[in-house]
Image 1: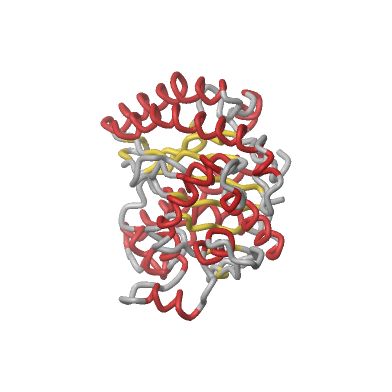
Image 2: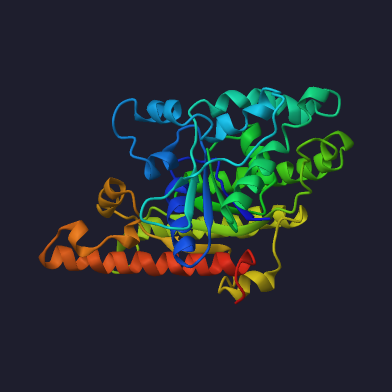
Length: 350
């Protein structure tokens, strides 16, 4: 079975989508076969892979490729059709062999209600018993078809039934944050939400109605990979004083609020595991500063910042030299992040 990693924070604007795309690219570059899943109805990850800049482009993609997105691939389960789920025909990411996308759908949120009811009443309502296990079943089928060893899940910032299902049934959760007061507050919320979802999944897996379903609900074993801090500015190679203040608050909140709550619910790896990748005394898996103007080049070319060439950024003199230095730094950031993920998730021996 593939390793499934959920990118989740109930605070928006923390670069979940960009991180999912960039880490997926780096893991594929390092020899893994990676499927990235756009489970956010905003479909930003889909827009990073497909050329949907023109008005109506996404609707045309849906019309020309029926069933080739997460919502429609799940319809046999959600609409109780007499056909089994099958692997999604993924979109191969341009310029990055070994990386594939399950596109999102703007109407995915319409399935929240059905899934929410199913996750509460599946033991008593026979027609709903296949829904809670359908996501995992679909991902496993698709990963097998593409020989993928990693599935990365880009989630919305909501606390609805879909995110509950996808986080609780993932193997690992990675929490992108920004060094600001809102991310500190979100950590406190996550300390309540993630344990509640994990405990729900453990109970759900014991229900006979779900374990005997056509798409069995998997026995959960969620583990915390760490917090990824992004979207901050540097001065002299260090976070500015204003950002550093919230770095400290965020780190303290993670260590004193989030980690104890996750540990009580069995969601933490061993301390030795975190220390093996250099996370001694902290649960911050990486710090990645703001991409600044390079993000425009990245989005236009639909490739990560760390893959941009001097020709593609088209800058001369000191500005060009600075940009190239930043690109090299971002490459090292994501290589280090991928290496830590590989070790913590058991993708590659240290």
